[in-house]
Amino acid sequence: FDVKHKSQGQYFAKGNYFRLESQKAPFNHLVYPVPEKAGLGVHATLDLGNQCRFGPDVEWINADVKHSHDIDLTVDPGRANIFYESIRRYWPFLLDGSLAPDYSGIRPKRFHPDVSLSSSEDQDFLIQ
Image 1 (cartoon, rainbow, N blue to C red):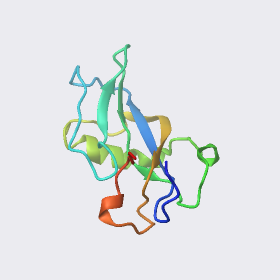
Image 2 (image 1 turned 90 degrees about the vertical axis):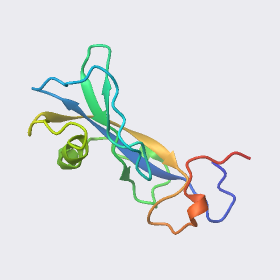
Image 3 (image 1 turned 45 degrees about the vertical axis):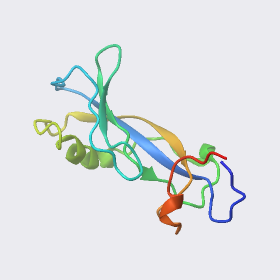
Image 4 (image 1 turned 180 degrees about the vertical axis):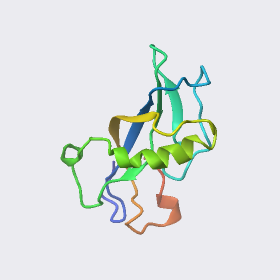
């Protein structure tokens, strides 16, 4: 990241994943919904053991956090409601109680919704 430009900075978004339990996924391929402003949307992935996981969402980390090692990577079970709503847009038969917190990761971003930037500066990458 080039942080020399005064309106640029390094910010973080946490991407959470939930795994499917007690219900079999009806698909045997990746499912990508329509992308959202800060991410690709909550999509379905299958691992080599055919376990289905959904994610990532976009959980913005406080703009004052400057180091990724200061971020708690625990997946908040309370975020499941966001996942149920997102997943049911492409799989309406997802049963209540079938998602369990799985893992999360951190994505560096050049913008943050709490920091005002022009619309041309809300892109993930800067090539110079």
